[in-house]
Length: 120
Image 1 (tube, one colour):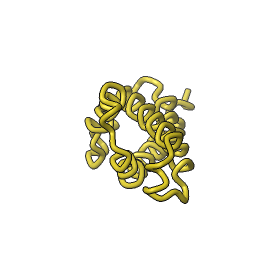
Image 2: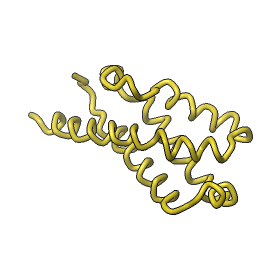
Image 3: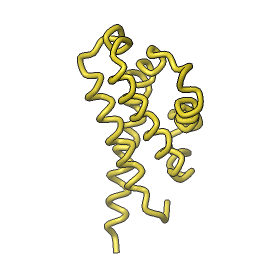
Image 4: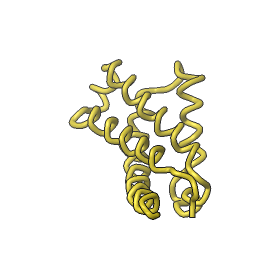
């Protein structure tokens, strides 16, 4: 059981995921590829998710082996250091296919963490 307060990091992941979902709601891949503002917003959301995931305890990551935690952490490095090489369709796929499962796990873990953190 994690002893440190982790709800802020989990909350950051959930919030960033919600923002990414909102930005992409009803948007096609073609429209996304042509909209630099949406791409920037999605990139920033994914960077936040990546950075926050690095601060989650190993216990949480071990409980959810279906989430590729190393890749989640690693995409932030790619976005920060190789930003010019990120294709819009890669961001799109990540946001559409991978982010929902991560958000679901983090939303559930957030509820558990908040309950634990409320105990005396």
